[in-house]
Length: 558
Image 1 (cartoon, helix red, strand yellow):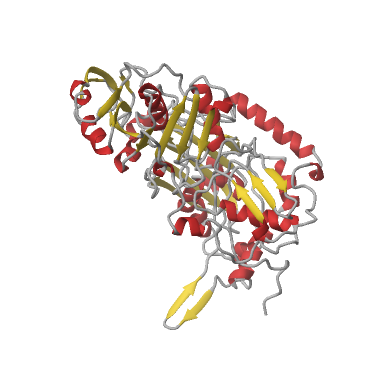
Image 2 (cartoon, helix red, strand yellow; image 1 turned 120 degrees about the horizontal axis):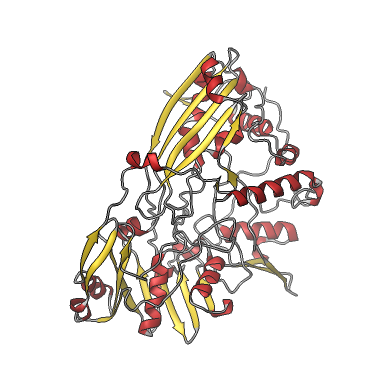
């Protein structure tokens, strides 16, 4: 999130604006777009029988000879240092194999943070992992115990005695706002957008709203707990992980432990829910290091408390949304500013301001986010882009009120946002018209005539609504797929993609079957293994409409 990043991204956008659309991926009309024998048809999930029959193996279910179990100890102060660390009782407890602390942890560097400047990085936190006696947040891992059973490991972990010297720490949102910092960028977008004088236009507006919204923090809570089963074979590392980033994790672990890329293999064919939280955190690093020290395979599964304490979630936020409109209900001012928590050692900002700048037209804009530094576990991606819920709580809901109930603007195709000027819009306008999407949705909902939708059902009346959203787009590097055509007419696709419940294998097989003109039964998709062609991390998986493909434009409603 640097000014240099803004310069680079802006230059790329400008260059793309001058490139003919047909030269870009997806720019040419797809000659096979109409072939849809499998896509859009109702069909069974290919992994359904494995999951229903209990044959789908998750990271914490892999059996290994000599497997031992790990339990973590978390810091109980917000910030400070450990002045006494007594592990003698834990080491003497039944079944204990090893106690890992900063005293015997291998020397490793911090994990590089996720970011545009290092597209292969996967780290959520740049803090050292068991490298010294410092405590940076309540919940930080300060020790780990290996034992023959999980119960023995948990009991021994409870016997470790730690004394702390607490240091002052920022923990209160409102008190820390005075020291908030203004980053140069948010994800891949420039942070501050100023067009005209939004405050002046707001004061002149015929209609205005000016409200402050607060949203709470959220914890990740996937059905499958974060878990990893690891084993060393000499200098070769095998990791069964619950992760959304298979190939990137393998590369990061190789660098972290001084190995060649081919010496690390990460397997994750099934993930029981990711939602942004199944990335690379401290527990995988500790488990791998402990397995090397003990010379035995290790399984480490966080309990629910452990997930809450050391896996980041969604930050709280405070947002001001102010709208000014003229007498005709057209926006003259749009102000969206606010605060969220973003520790200096974190990598994932809550991008609550990105939708407002892209979905709305206005004479003036003032949009900026500020980051508050609190002593907490760094936040991370949470159920895809965060701008969605913030837009719901602010701008989208207020647009109708600013227009004083006038619904005429909702029936007409919306204008495109004017802030900030962006050469991508020439391409976007050529490929997808927002008004067309709205009209399509209105026809599908039966509201094309302007009525918001009224469906009587006995004594109940159901009304329909239409909402829209926006998220920044970046083409992720390293999306590779191997396609093998066999002599018997079948085909095999292979990529280190993830399955988190969204039906990755089923959809990819459908796509390949339609493109190759094969039946679904003749196509196989191999995934979930870093030894396969590298795929990017999985993110922003959204449910798509499963109904059969319909012609466009749709028939006119009578």
